[in-house]
Length: 178
Image (cartoon, rainbow, N blue to C red; front, side, top):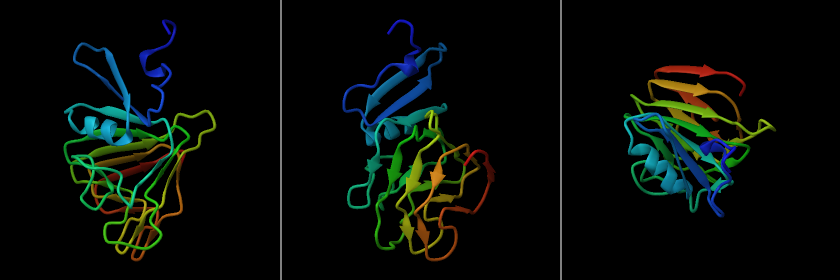
């Protein structure tokens, strides 16, 4: 693996996601593990980091996990102190909700957060799906400072009020290649 960049190394067997950031010395740090574990690691930093999906992720009973990176309702949370990129990498992130529920969106970006949704797969695929909310923002509820949508599909999400795919409440929203 000496000829590969650290972030391009093959994933650990059975890993669901890869967490990548640059430390204070400028070295790239990576770790493979569960989506829940890697997303929560991204919450621990005061610097930008990336979580790359290595497998399709489907919420269990509507919940992606526990910890600072997830709400009590089960959605993926981008908290106010975060600057995170989620690389779908040709994979699917699904909340898998058949019936509407309160806070049934897949991702919520809080005020103060910076979030980028992208894909790096050669096929330029990747999907965020399965949100189903009684309110707004079935796929993504954006309350944050900055949201950059750089690729992938936000599809198959529902909202009883507004924004089945994305509900842009506040901050800036830039879309390219989505």
